[in-house]
Image (cartoon, rainbow, N blue to C red; front, side, top):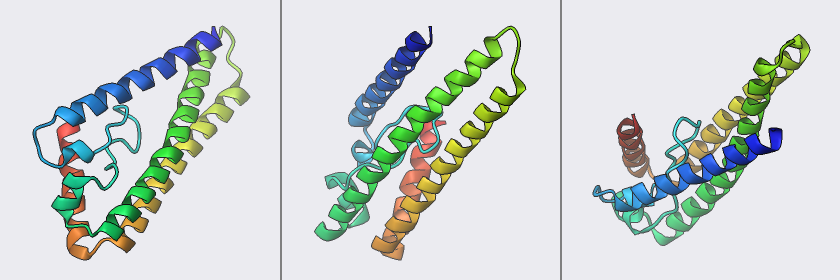
Amino acid sequence: MRYFLICLIAVVLVTSAWTGVTRAQTDDEPGLDNLVAQAPGVPGAGMPGPGGPGLRQRLGLTEAQAQKVEQILAAHRERTARLRIALGRARLDARELTLEAKADRAKIEAVSRRIGDLYGQMVRARLEVSFELKQILTPEQWSRFREMTARRMRARR
């Protein structure tokens, strides 16, 4: 049963990611083709992707800036992907505990602490990537970047 649920979560995450990538590629707004679509409802969703031509043009990035941005965002996506998988597993554990006939309070508290810790790690990762990007981008570029990110988040809602 547990193996089946883990496989199901993996399939849902992959399908959501694929659907989001397809949607981002067909979006009419310029530059959005470089925004990475992540599973909806997951912390960290909607982070911009590599410094492709659209993002480079809209922010006015130099080649060196674009390469650094691409490296930072690739590392961020890799790290948060592992965190999202761990968070899915923790949620699955929580779900299994709620389905048990007799609840074990210690297990419930351990899973809730684990979920809270994972959310905390996601927030720290977001703050770290923002800090790193702010070090590379000029104040003008940073302002445009934040506007693009805010517009993307509003569109997702």
